[in-house]
Length: 344
Image 1 (cartoon, helix red, strand yellow):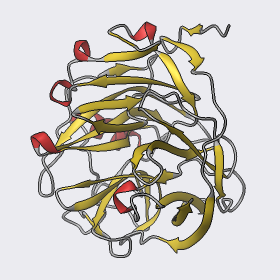
Image 2: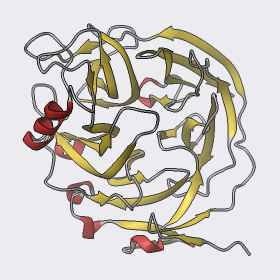
Image 3: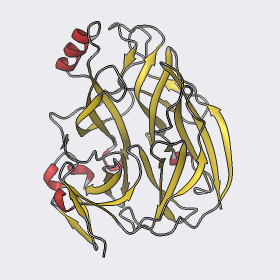
Image 4: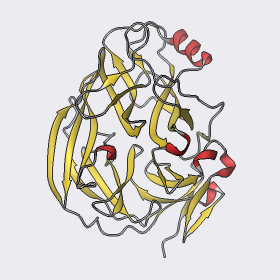
């Protein structure tokens, strides 16, 4: 019998549901559709979570490099965003000086810290965006994000925790709550998220992916959350949570009507492979993984880490899905590529 081993750092049990065989599907065709528009003054960015909200497909990016300093003297902002109704013409939110605007506002303390360290040691507080979910019952979107302390150098950063901002739509500034919903030593819920039958499901993926759920009306009430504990049980105790699958910390989970299952799409860690799993329910049981395509390798080495599906553009009920990923093209530049995957 498989036994779960507690991960005290995360406060969850490190046990995947028994992985079944790879999903029963065939990748009929993979088409590289080229690069997506970056927007004025943008030379690189990563991430790219998206969701349909108020008639637009809203795309959220994390670290964004600028071609010239903005009004605060920065050539790096920790998030940016754009919106579109197709996959060809994106509109970008700019600030009053015509530079790309951040989606989430910094607190005065974060801005003060970032400006004080801008020309010294380069330390900064960053707001890295994760899943966006349309809460249509309340005409708002929910945006998961991490508060990250970063400094120059490879992998020289750590997250202090995650929370959820609420957004009324274009023309409004997202509202960040006071404090964090989940702290540094807990799963980063919101690596993937969706609303199903009026319930918000959020995956806290790193290597393992525990699952929490909550009524969207109570998303910021920690006591309202429950966690998948296996054997048909949801527990109010995070320590009872188990991992539903393994993957990476940037994931998209959505319902695919053509396949008749939920699909999880993500980058295989430390590789250029893009993977898929399927399940009949958000909690599983999830299939084993199958490679759906190999992304173009970044220039200068490294790997692809942010493959994301955009199910609002599915055609044929999900027979064709669209997946984006970013790849480095230089030291401080990158491109976002789009790939169409047709399934059988």
